[in-house]
Amino acid sequence: MASPHPPESLIPRRLREERMQRGLTLEQLAALAGVSRAMISKIERGQSSPTAVLLSRLADAMGLSLSALMSEPRAASPAIRRLQEQPLWTDPETGYVRSLVSPPGNKDQNDGSGDVEIVAVELPAGKTVRFAATESLHAQDQILLLQGQLTLTGDNMVFELQPGDCVRISSMHTTTFDNPGAHSARYLVVKHHYH
Image 1 (cartoon, rainbow, N blue to C red):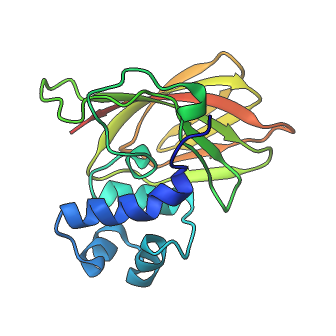
Image 2: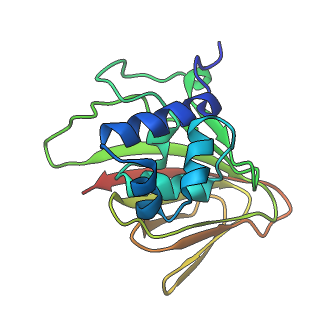
């Protein structure tokens, strides 16, 4: 059984819902995210597929995780997300494939512990994705390389990972994910969001 709403069909609606929920005009979101009003409008109408980097900038401008724009809003239940129900999204620019593994959780968690999500990623051979530092929603990410090679670079850091290596990074720093290998790099990202 396939996911009832693939991310490609959810992104336009979720972006519009989250923008409207915050009372932001297209112009206001454009100014916050550094993305043109025309591009945001095209994405909301489903006329353009955003890249991972562009979508990350829009999410950050609204204080959201990238995954929040790729899946239905979180609810308290169910506490399981089967493999076939995991939203899968492919970056149209790099072929980077992202799957939200975590089951939906309680979005209104007020115990100060923040929110944790698990994302499975496949970065094709020779491809690079660069994420700018986030300004509103901060996260500590642990990256566990499962297969292939992965080089993470950023503010005063370079980590060359081999399968089984795990590194902790902060979303408050710009980070480049580079696959220098001849095969896809598969890795898990465990994100702990906090405000």
